[in-house]
Image (cartoon, rainbow, N blue to C red):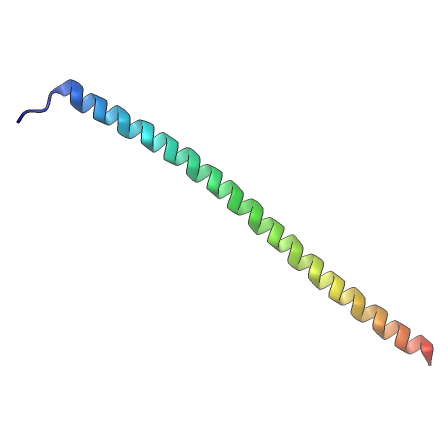
Length: 66
C-alpha cells in the first residue's frame, strides 16, 4: 500500500498544528505554575511575619507589665 505525497503532507501539517497547540498549553501551564509558586511564597512570608510580630508583641507586653 502506497501513501501519497499529499497525504503525508496533510499528516505533517496536522502534527505541526497539534505541536503548536501543545506548546501554547505548556506555556500557559508554566505561567500558572509560576504564579502559584510566587503566591505560595508570599503566603509563607506573611505567615512568618505574623508569627514574628505576635512573638515580639507578647514579649514586649510581658516586659512592660512588670
